[in-house]
Image 1 (tube, one colour):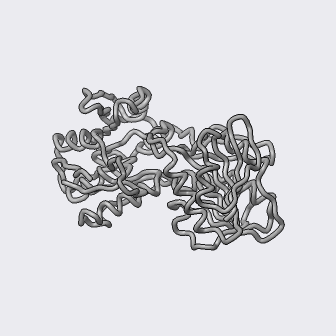
Image 2 (cartoon, one colour):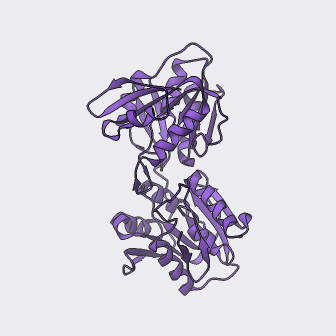
Image 3 (spheres, rainbow, N blue to C red):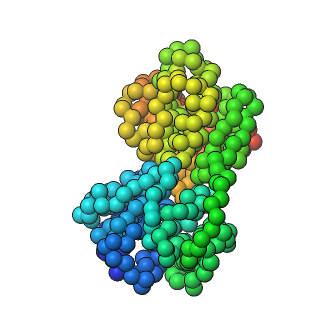
Length: 374
């Protein structure tokens, strides 16, 4: 793997989840540009730096030995990557404070470095939270590859931080440099809410939740076909998002023991709030995690999943395949994985490589609901 070399450090970095012969790097030119700009500005060991959305820890690990670094993001896999990359490069794992995006990072901060996320609502929420957390003279610099950097990102920086100046492009990356000025506090528009008609639910969605403003069409195709059982089923909603699959299943299956897991902290926060609103104090294990990687083998009877087909801007079925493998490992013999997916993704053939039986439960012109039996 190539070394990430900057004025601050030379690092051997890996992505999470790791895959053999991964052609993708854990850093890019935008990370390099951001660090070079910071080095030109100058920092000391006492400089308080907040890093936002550092996908695999390239920024925070580079700065760990040079400043007081806090890293915040919405990816549990990103948190794992930061810890592993610090250890991999013999840096103090406790030397970088990590704050999940479901919580506010408390300053004051002298420098804020931002990788512009795919979801601009997350960026907006993060910028709103910076109010009152910036030291006098603080600068806020956002970075991204030009092809992934929307004009609206600069507008948000100007609205919530202060005057914004875009840099020239370098190696197809660009910086958005904002100078903090006094601005009145603005109430956040997040979380948002929408109504589910059947069953009748109001669902809360924090800023980075997938399909935040309404039920996504894959889940809409899946909900009428969820399995029903009066037994004491141990069930998991894998990649739960706001928890809608697990909650609707739990309402129809009152004896079910439920686990809801997602790698997004804001998704888990949303699922916890939605569970309490729909099911009160009924016990459930709702957690941030690397899918079912930490789930004991042979501990589940049922897994429900609407798998993702991208990780940040990278599209592919690697994460879905990994979730299917995790589900198989966690299921008892005879246990079932139920999924919804786009027809063109060919999940039926992929599941046949892992499970003894795969059948189509339902179909729409765009989606299929599949049941795979271990």
